[in-house]
Image (tube, rainbow, N blue to C red):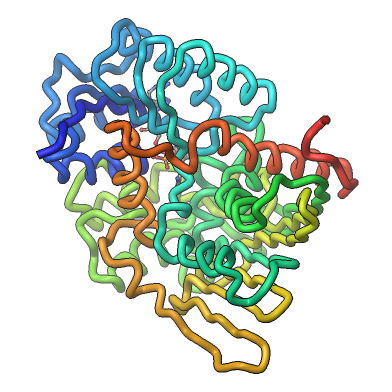
Length: 422
Ligand SMILES: NC(=O)c1ccc[n+]([C@@H]2O[C@H](COP(=O)([O-])OP(=O)(O)OC[C@H]3O[C@@H](n4cnc5c(N)ncnc54)[C@H](O)[C@@H]3O)[C@@H](O)[C@H]2O)c1
């Protein structure tokens, strides 16, 4: 049996506790969760009990938590603007860190964290989970093998999905860029990371346009209430919180614990009355036309990589389902990939089309097409000293610089910008 690493988690939310925490608690031969930190006492209690962490090792104060090192490794999954400060504290104490993306929305903070990493050492793996999903790895393999010749251009669509936009970017955590990172970084640092990984080169120049078209006061239907539970359009509005958080939850079989319903309550199994209470009182019951959101609902980024490959990324809220669609134009054929249909197609010019079923590659379960579980395996190997993760801090900063530059370009009306100063 291999070594069992002790783990502390800071930020016991959807990612820290529900995703990574639950996997780690299940994989007892690899991890043992020994300490938790969250500003929310209720989450500390719920996950402390779920993971067997005693009350004496649950901290609601970040200062107390970082007073001493409490485990071999730290899962850092608080909100975006806390990551750099907390990661610096962790590295200073000698932790190896699993760091949620985005690292930060600021170029200066990226540099500060790289400097701290250089000074203190420690392993930092950034949660670009899709790099560990088998289907995305398969595409990279096909490109590297040159089955369709040389890569010329990539066309990529991030289908945010109408309800996911409403959940995260209108009512939820990432709705307002004054409080958190811009949407192109929050939602698309995975896509940008994949694009530079597939292009096999750093991004040279990019430009971006985008806007908030729909989720604003002037788009509300006549006489809409500011909360769905009290609104006359509750049955007909496509963004009705009641239709989604209760109707859709029931339609899929009233799961005891599933994202995004689990964001509305800390009581599991989830019950209808708890969801209803959250809609009556909490942020997720607000009308999508009456929130304090300001992030975009559609954005396009055009890129040229240093090796000449071109790419285009379209992020849009206005899709019926989520997932990515990517198409790779190569000198001797096309490769395309679609999350929704679960397929990768290889189309060499003048030859038979080969269809690879992604779902067959995704065995192993967990979210992000098996990427969450893949990342946990990788983190374990990194802790054991067996591997150097492809999404270590230094390489992950690249996609962040691309997103930061894209937002800068968008705010300047789409001017082309160099990603790197040199
Ligand atoms: N890798 C991915 O694909 C992916 C997907 C979704 C979210 N994320 C990222 O994961 C991070 C967390 O997102 P989430 O969806 O889990 O959010 P969440 O709100 O469910 O969890 C965040 C938790 O951090 C806690 N917290 C806030 N400030 C804190 C502090 N100072 N000290 C301790 N705890 C604090 C909150 O109480 C909450 O429990 C974000 O940075 C987000 O961008 C990554």
